[in-house]
Structures are given as C-alpha cells and as structure tokens.
Image (cartoon, rainbow, N blue to C red; front, top):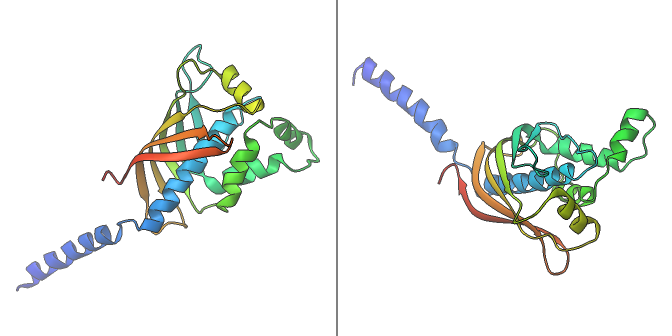
Length: 203
C-alpha cells in the first residue's frame, strides 16, 4: 500500500470515527427529552404571566388578533437560566427593576419552577435551539386558559410539536428531537407532560 493510499485511509478513519462516536446514548436522549419538556412548560407559564415573561432565548410567534402564540422559537435557550429566572420571582427584591419582575408572577410559575428544580438544571448544562408549534385546542383563548389555571380547573391537552436540538455539558453529544408532547392536568389535578411519537436525530 503506497503512502497516498495510506493517507486517504487515515483521513477516512478520522472522518468516520467522530460520526460513530456521536451517536447519543439513552441517557443523552432522556436528558434532551426532559429539557424540551421542561422548556415547554416554562414557556407556557411565562406566557401566562401579566405581562408575559420574556425568557432568554425564547421568542413567541402570534398571529394578528390571536390571544395565544402559534409557535415558540428557541435559540440557545439555557435551562439553567430559565431556572434562575423563575427562582428570582420567588425572592424578596431590593431594587425597582427586580421587584417589577417579581410582580409579573403568573399562575403556573410554581409548576414551572418545580420541574426546573426537580431536574436541577445549571447554566451551561443544556441549551435548546429550534421550534415548538402549539395546538391549544378548539375554542381555547388566553382568557379561558387563564381561568382554568387560576380556578384549579382541568387543563385540556395542549399539543406541542417540536423540532429542537439540545446541546451542553450534561450531554455527551448534541441530540435532535422531533415529534410532539401533550400538556394537561390529570384526574387528580397534577400537571402532566407526555411525550408522543418522538424521533431522535431523524430516526
């Protein structure tokens, strides 16, 4: 085997090896799905704040005259920063700007913080980039959804259709998730996020 052929083989091995190593583990997939689930509820909770809470890296898309957004764009949305943002809403604040942020408290803030705290997200561990489209259900408006939440009524299934990439130090490699989640309250009144028909890296 001549030097040119050996060089070509080595180059091919260097290209193929990272692709083989880049396959996400079951742990990576679980972390990515959990992060997307938590981000979805965190952003729904943020929208129900008065005024709506702007989470870093998250931009809502809303049609004219609609009261609820049709989609959410994520760009390097960090779960650790989400967590810090919600934690700041629950602390006494000494300056005017932070007190205004605290006054924006919404009816699902405690639920969002519960999910974020349970999974102990820290800054840099997982950030999300992609799109989440929402199907709120027949006849659901911001007013009707807010009423259900405030009065402790049932929240009928809200479908979140996702196409999102997760990256960060908590993952061994980037993970792309596409598919949908359902968000709703069960018969005991607990908030549930249920993944459905998910694909990992297109498979």
